[in-house]
Image (cartoon, rainbow, N blue to C red; front, side, top):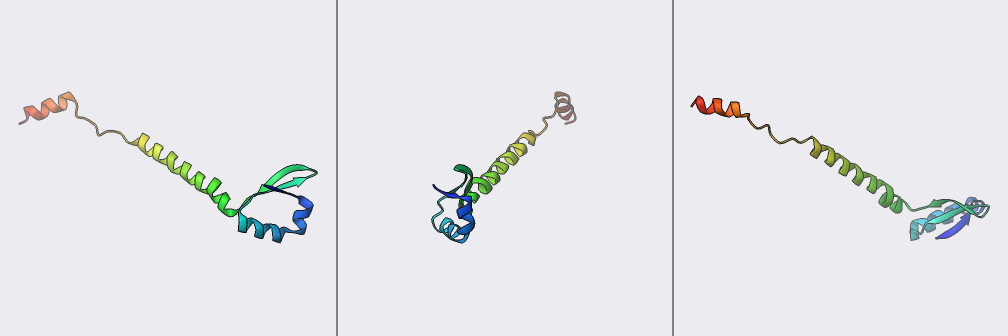
Length: 87
């Protein structure tokens, strides 16, 4: 991952954006020698966050749906006996 100072980013944002789009390589943003952020491509963003969040939400909803499903109520012994007696 290449590093870029915040000052240099201001001067070359267009070039950095084009490179990010073309290569997809993340860029570490530094201030005073310390990494303070990372620029990533939209493709990486979607793969790491959007798609993952959607998959997690689908899993959560499926678990909720499955937890709410109950087996059909079985007739009680008395109901079965009443049914048999009425025949």
